[in-house]
Length: 155
Image (tube, rainbow, N blue to C red):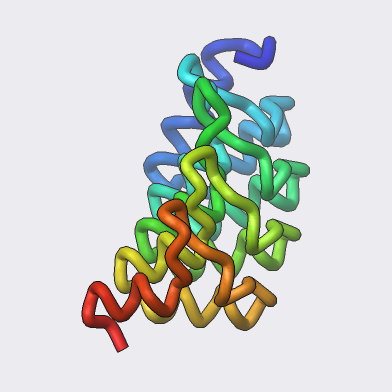
């Protein structure tokens, strides 16, 4: 936790998970920080990414959440990678518009491009490339995204 009242943080996480944008706004206005984390070190912004909540992501970013802040107990998870892994293209766009760096690597070496390619999410990959992601950065095993796409049979 980051020191904020537990009920406010729990309420924020419940609102993020449920996509309750009005409640997110109310809690942020009441002083719950956009950078709030849960007991596992997961940020509200990361939860919005993996829950496919682009509106909530935009609200958190507008309230000052760091688009590149690593999440989880070991800091291994990036919100942009979480969104790309799930094929949540609008969340990816919101992150990139909010200043996320498209080529940052998670702890195991994945970039958002590698996640999008491995999972076969062409629209998500397009959004990343439109925002300057490097299509030639190797994935965790050293393979280039084009090789990963070919292996999965994805043109």
